[in-house]
Image (cartoon, rainbow, N blue to C red; front, side, top):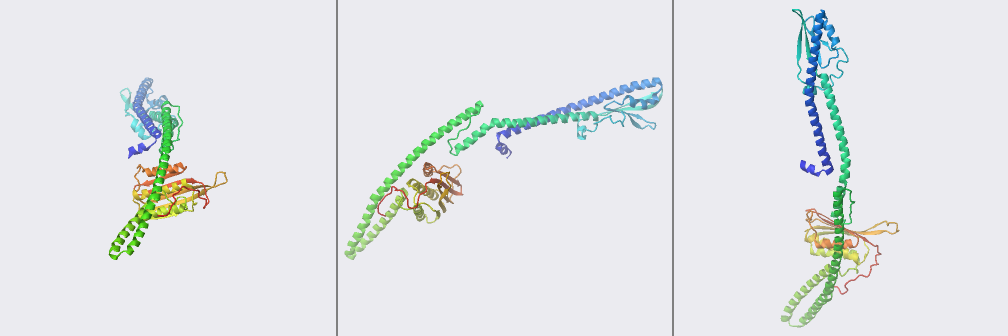
Length: 482
C-alpha cells in the first residue's frame, strides 16, 4: 500500500520528499552532535569555574587571615566574587546553616537567562556537578566552612540558544533550498510532463501532436525522437486510412456487383420457379385425383422452399446493399433494417428513437449511417449477446460561424446491455471499417464498453441540410420486389 502510494506520486514530489528527509536527517544529526559536544563543554566550563572560585577563595582567606579580618569573610566574598559564573558559593551562618553569599542572589545581573533552557534539555545535557567544601580555620579553631557548588544553568542556556539558532538556520536553509528545488525541478521535469501529454495524445489517435524540444541534450534527443515517431505514425495512419478507404470502396463495389447478380439473376429465377409452380398446379388440377394429389404436395414443398429462398435473397440484398437506398426516406430505411434484425432475433427488445431526419443526406452519408447501425447491431447480437438495444438518431442544428447558415450534425447512439468488451480488447474489422467510413466524412466515432456493462457506440457526422424531397439521384438497384 505504501509502495503504491509512493509510486503514484509525481517524480518532482518524490525527489522533494527524498531530499527533505535527507536534509531533516542532516539537521537532526547536527543537533545530536551539538548536544553531545555541549555536554562535555558544559562539564569542562563548570569544573573550570569551580576550580577558579576555589583558588580565589583560598587566596582571599589567606589574605584575610594574615590581616586578622577572617570574620569579615562573608562580607568580603560577595564583593570579590560577584561576577563569578557557573558556581554558587555558600557559607555557614552563625547558626551553622548554609547560606549563599556569592554571587549575590539578589543581583539582577547574576544570570539573566538562567532558566531559558527547558527542563528536559537541562536533564539531557546537564553534567553531573559536585560540590567542594573549604573549612575556614583561625589558628586551631574552626571559624566556619565555605561550599563551592557548580551551577550549569547559565551555560546550558547558552547551549540551548546555540542549538535552537542552529536548528532554525538549518531549517530555514532547507526550506529555501526546497523552494528553489521545486522551481528548478519544475523547469527540468516540465519537458517530461509535455512528453507524457504527447504520448497520451498519440494514444488517443492524435498523430499530428508535436512537442517543443528542450535545451537539455538528453531530453532534446528524446523529444526529437518523439516528434519523428509522431510524424511516422501520422504518415502510416494516413496511408492506412487511404488503404482502408480503397478497401471499403472495393468492398462496396463488390457488394454492388453481388447484389446486382442476386437481383438480376437469382430474382428472376425464383420468380420463374414461382410462375412454373403456378402453371404446373393448373395442369395438376386437370389430372386425375390419384395423380394430382402427389403433384400438388410436391408443388407446395417447392413453393415453400422458393418463398424461403426469396426471404433469404431479400435479406442478403439488404445486408450487401439495400435496394431501397436513395429510393425511400432514410428514416424508413433504418427502420426497415432494424425490423429485419427484430424478425431474426425475436428474443431481443429494440427501442428506436429516430428523427426528424431529411429524406436523404446524399448516398455517402446515407450508406454510412446504414452501415454504422448495421455493424453495431451485428456486434450486439453476435458478440455481445444483448437482450436489449436502444437506437437513437437525431439531426442536430447549431448556429453557423458567421455564414448566416446553421450547421447540421447527425448524432447516432446504439446502446446494448450485452457482455461488453474487456479493457484493451481489440475491435473487429467491421468496427474499424465503420470508423474509417465516418472519418472519411470528417465525423467522429466513440465506443464505450466494459465487461458486463454493455457497449455504447456514438457517431457524430457533419451533414449538409437538405429539404425533405430533395434527395439526390443515388445509384440503386432497380427491379421488381421479391
